[in-house]
Image 1 (cartoon, rainbow, N blue to C red):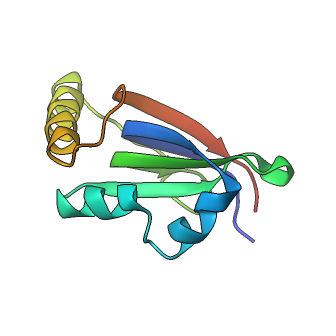
Image 2: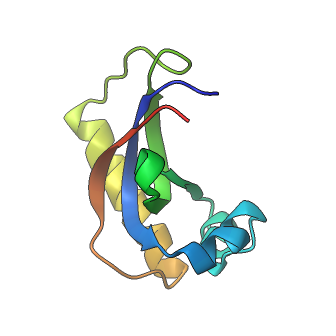
Length: 110
């Protein structure tokens, strides 16, 4: 069992269907593969707790805050602009489209 955490990610956020979970578990989802090819990362999980709501992030993981992870994180405005610009460039290179943003999502106890 893992403890609750807050995931902070810069990039794209996708709601994942139950049919896509198997590929994500095997790291064979095309979005995972493409992100890795351009030097980005992906992170996915069940963010709905008992109500199953799977989410996939593609881009740059900024931090995961929680008792079993980081306790604090800080990013200057300049650093955030650099990360956003670099992430946007790499997502375009991977042909992954969508509105790039800063996403904070609560991950309940597993």
